Image (cartoon, rainbow, N blue to C red):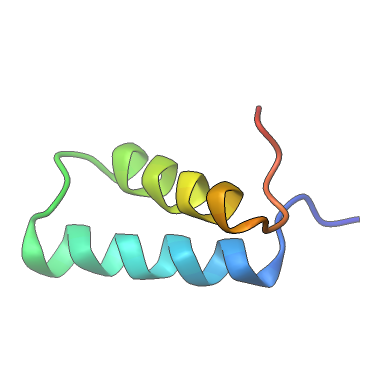
Length: 49
């Protein structure tokens, strides 16, 4: 059983791109956290832990 849904994967991928190519976030972890947070707000499958 997967923990994260396709919406979460897409959001995290987008934020990682912003981090790598545009320097939007200071660390990878921050980019992943923002992607998962956006997924939760949109009602996607992303656990809180």
